[in-house]
Length: 514
Ligand code: AMP
Image 1 (cartoon, rainbow, N blue to C red):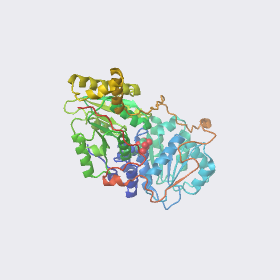
Image 2: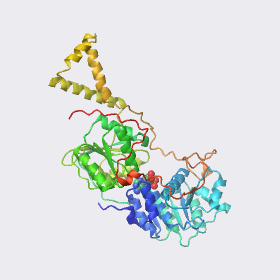
Image 3: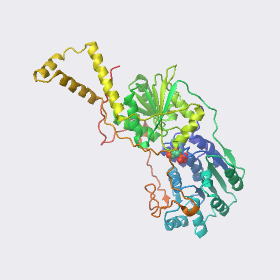
Image 4: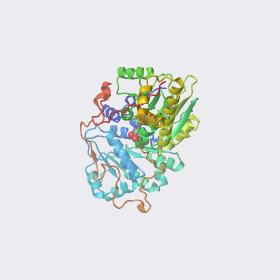
């Protein structure tokens, strides 16, 4: 498998640094295809789902095209919902963390006009908005769109379904046509989308992610519906209910690898991590310890784990669902090697289920939906293990030297049953981890996004949008220079990550004798 890197896509250095700060190690398939084509100036239509990484696929080319010395809107992104508009604006803003002076502005219905007008007048370089509100601003005439050179229709099929066709056409007609680049993204290709893009784009390049299917044999595949905040707890339960000697946990970003590893260490698991910011030497050390069994859980990104050949991996955990189905196949292929059977556990939530369905088509195998083990089941399993250990020890008869202690307790009037019960409870305590409640939200697939529907503008909160934190009153996002929020010193040096002072002392995990 040839790996495309962000560096090979033609992006400028400050954008590559922005991507690196976000912890992205490799482009998703839609990014690998779209970014070079968009940078070449072509109009295009990309077929991709939400969650495929399409925001960066158009966001990075937009950022590269901007003249930051010119205080005028140069790029416009249309989104079907205000929530998506905010998300897109946030993501592009994060990608632009190394661009000095970049200004972006989300415009959507339900929020006060005044601040948006101020942001448009001050010449935000990028505007992301819902069609209804964009029209409102265009009609009031306070927004200079003469410098707009890039337009993105995000989720074009959805905007058409929601009745935004006329608004979109009005907006596209109001923007300069000369020298304009139009990018369209859609989950499906239907005649309406086709007609729209043919009318407003020039010779658009169609980008589709088609792949030959791949299969994985001898790996049992399960998935669990897990919210982000419960992932560590669910992973711990799976590890506790079926202890393994060697497992690999895959995450999509370097940041997530660090967070996951830290959380597992804090819970007493023998875990370590590898990713692109850890030196080759550091990675080799970790892998050697994983091979010899000192490290039971290896937390890794796809890039860092590529080419790893380690025998005896009993389980693979997809802590994050990969963007590329091929990565999934490579990940789970690390278990079940050499004729042995292995197990792959995948965590998904919400709309990720659509990506999982696409994955199932790709591997031509269903992935079994599996309930999260309950706290009682995990406790029961632990109790069973203690029982079997005691029974084995009794059968071996290997407990010479304990009689004196037992006699002392008997002399004090304790019954043999009480003594045995106390010993059992001590053994169980040593193997017990306090379990967290799991947030069970039974509506994960429902699209709860408020829509900016044109018909009567239904769904608009009169009280204003209470969306993501940080967006409340601020209409625009000016970048402060030299903001380095993500890089930590240990990430580049390959050193072990220091533990926060307040972190609780890891509880020693009770290991069963092998
Ligand atoms: P999108 O489809 O743009 O909404 O992206 C879905 C999620 O994927 C967002 O949380 C992004 O931050 C994340 N993401 C996008 N590109 C990458 C990448 N190359 N590697 C890891 N995560 C990514």
